[in-house]
Image 1 (cartoon, one colour):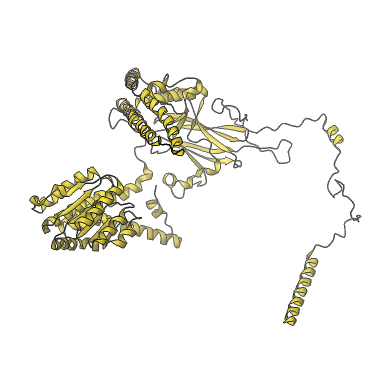
Image 2: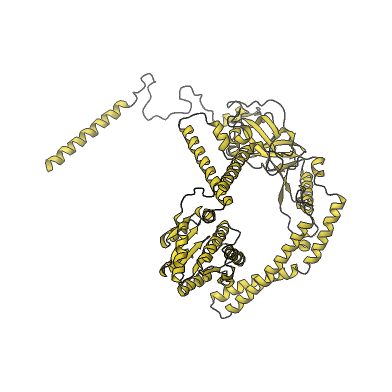
Amino acid sequence: MRRSWLVLLAILMLLGAFSLSLAQTTDEPPDTDAPDQEVGAPVEPGDEEGQEPALPAEDVEEAGEGEEEPAMEAPGDEEISAGDELAGEEVAAEETELEEPGLGTPGGGLVLPRPNQVEVFDVPNDGGAGLGVLWYWDGATSAQTRIYIEVKSSPELLDEYRLTDDEWNRLSRELDALEADLRDILPVRNAARAETVELDIALRKAIADESPEAARLRREYWQKQIVENERMQTRRDKLWDRLQRRTGRSSAGDDRLPLLEKYQAFRYLEAAFAQGEWISTNIANVNPEMIETKADYPDLFGLDPEEADKLYAAVNSLRAVNPAAIGEELFVNAEARYDYQAPNTVSIPLTPGVHYDLRMVVMEGELIQTHDLGGAATRTNYLDRSKLNNLIFAAVFAALILSAIAIARRNPKMFIRRISGLEAVDEAIGRATEMGKPVLYLCGLDPLSTLPTIAAVNILGRVARRIADYDSDLLVPCRDPVVLTVAQEVVKEGYIDAGRPDAYREDNIFFVTDDQFSYTAATCGIMMREKPAANFFMGYYYAESLLLAETGASTGAIQIAGTDALHQLPFFITTCDYTLIGEELYAASAYLSREPMLLGSLKGQDIGKAMVMLLIILQTLFFIISANWNWLRMLVEPL
């Protein structure tokens, strides 16, 4: 054992000696041509070859006397201090050629980049009118560079928002009526708010001290908060909604601004123009590194545009300042009279048919340069050609659905994939009839405005008709009053269609409560008392899903569930006999009724989905084999 350790130690020593000798041989040999120098002698500055000897400090000062260092001046553009008002002073850009000084020149320093090869043009905009700006940088940008695009003020722009005499009289009348109605509301609400704050502080202290006064303070707190504060705030909001309706658009097709917004835009623009000749836009304080290029907008410039690396920015709104910035008010004493607080800035969309002159402000540190970009007139874009692919897809899908409906009318036995949960509906209802027990049907916990609840109510109508045919009982406890009313009508119609209107019992479709777990507890109690033979859980569910399904399973009932709530599907799959997953819930109505309209719509949607899947597969294959697939990208790329 000792011998093996000695051999290993000898090998390690040999390896160490070899590596040391290898390191010594790889070092650069000494320069034999260099003059001899005493080891350890200090090297004086300037002794190195090719370097001039440094002057003492006194000599430097004497040599610098009488020589004036040339001041650094940014070529081509005027520079101003960053502390000046950016919106209040116009900085004129010189049109001379940029000539960046060399690094070794006495005047060399920071030169801001400037836009080059600028193009300004009208672009489609979902919010109205817009202007596009394309440019290259002449010079390098940095992480500290910021750019602003501003619009030159003009009387025409301000006149677009100026109120006529009739409009002003109309707005004044409505504001006077609003002020009169708010006189009895605002003092009560403001007093309730102040008392609520005081009660909240006292309540927290009483709870911390475990005082018996906590219960009384809690009642007083909610009395002030809910009964007085929130009630008065609701009345105030309704009065403001009335003002918006009366001073708003005259018709649904009227594209004019409401009078209040129009007046606000006018005063804000007026304040912005009073501060300076230029006004900010939505392109403000932007890092050039975050600006996209033409290649990022295939909907505007195509998939392979010329000059794809050219920078692009869209100007679609103005940023106007509050009139308080120039010592004025939007309305005199507006907060006390109308409970209105004007925002610091507002975004005003560009107006179609107006010519806008643009400039770009480039800022870095304390340096600011401005550059005229030119101008263009905006126009109303009635047709956005970049969205033509959406129109194509909509037309194709509509044709598929209409064709499928026509085929379903000729062939009502059109094939639909078998859904085991829906096949078991007749079995569950038949079992309930044989056992003489009712069927329990739940429509979920969401209101009728949601898709799962609408689908659940549609299925309820089909199930009610089958139950009427089998002469069984149906129980439908509801959480929402609107769902209750609709469910009663749907069940009644199902019994009438089955020819059994006398068997319909309105009391079997009843309201329980709108509280989540109170409703769950009541429904579980019904299951334990009535022992239904079949339970249907359709619609959208939350944390109560497992409680309901477990209780139903304990009674031995056949359970069929259907939901698109992803988090609740595992519980239903585990505890129910059959589960409709996702879109199967929406297909159930067509599956049970076999109506041509529903069947055709379902079949057409399935064909459309298959086409989309085929396009995805083709796009993947073309990408893998590096084929020319631009036509496919242009068709399916979301725009």
